[in-house]
Image (tube, rainbow, N blue to C red):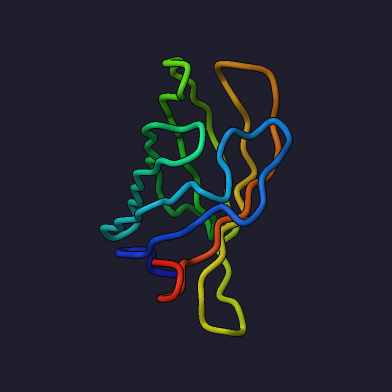
Length: 115
């Protein structure tokens, strides 16, 4: 289990059915196996991820308010990796529950130059 507490991440890749973008920033907190994140940027004015580590993977529920004032959400299963450069990557496989679609997003840890 990789500790995500205090990490800031950006969306380096998104699915066509996704709403997040390269300007979306995610701010993580972790307490034991529970993981939380708040995020915003691009079409998302405010979003939350709430989840936990279970059986070697990270599972989330998410909810977000979008620029058109709609509120949408779903669930995801994530692979968490440590890259050769020491940064963390999350590959999120998501499924919407409030609209049609699913896909994968990639979140990469922000380096000091991107802060």
